[in-house]
Image (cartoon, rainbow, N blue to C red):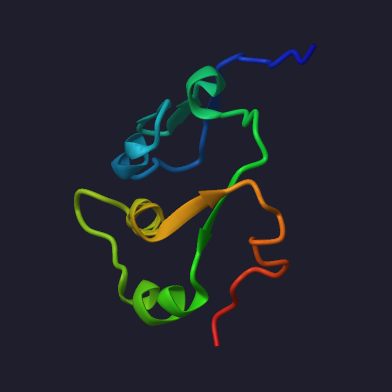
Length: 102
């Protein structure tokens, strides 16, 4: 049996965090205070499935992904991956090495 600690984490930072950090699920920023609720944010995967995306698609289309006022570049990248990938449980289909920029 696995036990997960779901204690909320709150820290006071030397400077105020940008309000855009509130976009992250379960993250709350209020001035110098940042709070993360692990029960809502951290996921535990029960399967060994992966998302696989063609390297040529990544190299040709991903460099053009940018962030917007409504969506951080990380979220836009995740949306791109979800739109262009497919799930697999075959470890042989997933590349052994991550895609590196040229």
